[in-house]
Length: 379
Image (tube, rainbow, N blue to C red; front, side, top):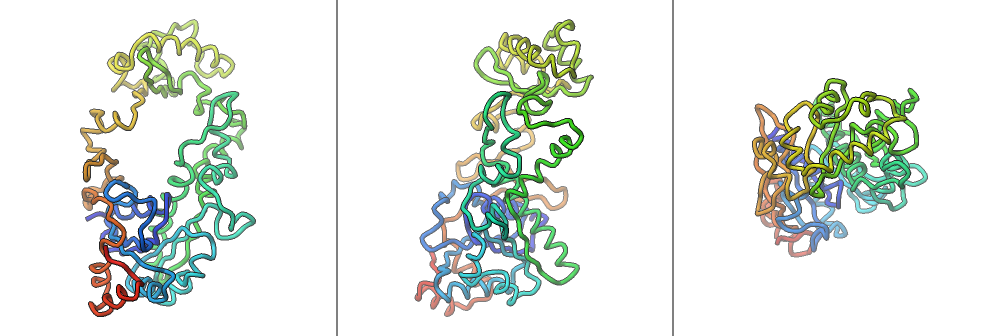
C-alpha cells in the first residue's frame, strides 16, 4: 500500500538525514532496501530507531568486489538509489552514478551532502549546525539580544536534507517515467535550509525583516506570537496574528484595551510582552486550555514528547502509533486511495539479506557463495 508502492529504492545506509529520507519513502509504500555495513550501522538500535522503520536490511561489504557487484546487480532492477557519502567516496567504492547507471540507464541516483558535490567546502566535514549557519537560517533563530539558538537538527538534516532528498527523488522518478532516463540529484543541506528560509529572504527584500533577532512578528518579537509560561511552570503558545484572532485573544485573556489596543506597533511590543507574560502566569496551562483551546485565538498548549501522543486531537486522528512498544509519529501525509500501512519496526542489519537477494534474482548458490567469501552477511 501507499502511493509509492511498486517502486524499488536502494538506500546506502548512513546517519541522520539519509535514514529520514528512507523512512519518508518507505512510509509511502516504496520498497526500500537498506544496504548496511557488515557489523551494522552504529546509529541504529534494533526495533527502536524510528528513522530505520519499514525497510528491508541487507549487510554488504562494499570493500569486497563481490559486495560491490551485489549492489550493482540490485541497481539493474531498481528505480532509484541514494547515498550520503562525501563527494567522491561512492566512486572510490565503485558504486557511483556512472557505475550504477551503466547497469540501468533509467536509474535515479540521489546524492545528499551538507555542502553539495562541488564548491570550496564540498570535501569538508560538517553537521546540521554548520550547514544552516551559511544559509542564514541559524542566525535568524533566537530571542532579542541573545545568541542564535540551534533549532535541534530540523532545518539542515531533516527539512533541508532528508525531506528535500525525498522530494528530489520523487521528482526525478516522475521525470524518468516520461523520458526513460535516469539522472543524478545533487542535494545539499545548506541549500535545502536556505530554501526553507525563502519567505524571510523575500521579507528582507521588502525591508520587512532584518538581522536583529527577536524583533519581528514570527520570531518572538511580537506579544501576540510567542510562547508563555503559565502558573504551573508549563507553557502555552499564542499566534493571534489576524485582527479578528487578536480581538478574541484580548477578550479571552482579559487584555485591557488601553495597553493592548495597538497590535501592530513594534515599538510597543516589548512593554506589551511584559504585561501579557504576567497575565498568562496568573493561571495554569490547563486553565488556559479550558478558556482558549478550540477557539480562533490560535492557541495550543506546549506539549513535551511524553504528552503529545495523548492530546485528544492527536488521538482522534491517530497521529501517533505504537510499534514494538515505541510510540512514534504515524506516516504522513495521508492519501485517500492509497493509504500507508502501519510502520514495521527497524530490522537489525543483515536481517533480510538472503530473502532480498533471492527476490532480486540471485540464485541460492550465488547467495551462498557471497556469504562464504564475506561479501554479504545474513543475521
